[in-house]
Length: 278
Length: 211
Image 1 (cartoon, each protein chain N blue to C red):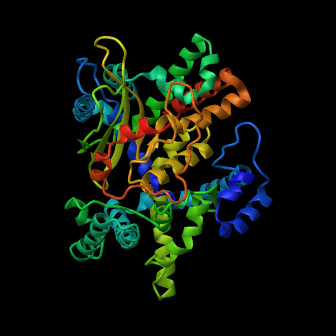
Image 2: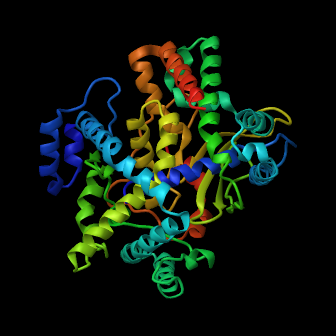
């Protein structure tokens, strides 16, 4: 825990300190080095589960049952189109020319031909989607995730991704709507739409996971890392039958992933890199 | 935004099934060719099997056993998920762990199979040397919406004609084995190996009750 604190930039220190005081440090057998705040996080997780089963899940289920699929699809597409605008900005901040261009094309095509984003024409035209937020951008430029963090209502995150959240909110077009009732309605509808899209995943998680909390955590951390490296992260460990620790390591601050589209990455040779690692 | 990946995780399921769909065949088939053939065959058998599409579990298990399992080193997969404690487990315990883990995975992913409709699989270019004993084959599942990343890690089985076997898979950047590792470790550290077996068995039973 102490060592972890040293490795994170000082501006996170305050937040971390608060968290540590709230939680106490998780030590002892089974403590996950990526999740020093586990006792606190589990508390938030229980809170989230309670809120979800009391309010969010019932509302989302009703929404799914009442609204025709086509309407829900259109609503999802509409918000997805707004999200692509922010993905364009973040791909540009990561100097990813092709991905930024694709995002821009998607917004253009869907806004004009897709009736303001209600129809996802761009996907039909095979224009790839590269969803990126500011947490990805920070990660791309070498900032590690820091401790895993379970946020109230919002769910899985990390210290880095939480620090990035206010920036994402600034870049959120829904939040920029000046008319307050419209903005609030849009925010609520988007929330319901997001939750309804997760209904099946939630049921699956209940069946697949022995411990939903750690299943979600491990999947979240791996997924975020993978996206930062465009689906092709460097090997974290020696993969062998039973040896080796299960703990992934983040890239050193300053070392950043090689740029580029998937094709570039795949041609740099994943297996070769793995073997080069000690 | 942060939970977006969960939605994709579900989509994964369907791909996961596809992934595993692999009949055994010639020994010197290249790993990427193997994955391509298996993916295609599995997709085809799902599309032509009404029972699978409606979620008939026994049909799904039959498909998994016939096509997928011969191409998976499930022993290695389970041992990696269990971690260092695997070596201390008796052969009987190892067998039970493999059985229950397999049921858990098959059951979980069964739902995904029913979602397969017009998906296709694209194999990405693979970089490996001829002497490599382990490779990663990267694929994309394309259907409606965003393409889903689905990668397989394969090993060359020692001995003549044994061929390549899958021992880990990656959906949307999330490795299956790694995701179970810390959950298994938790169970083992509090309840031991038999505790883990009991937990898996109970989970499978309660999943079965849900239909």
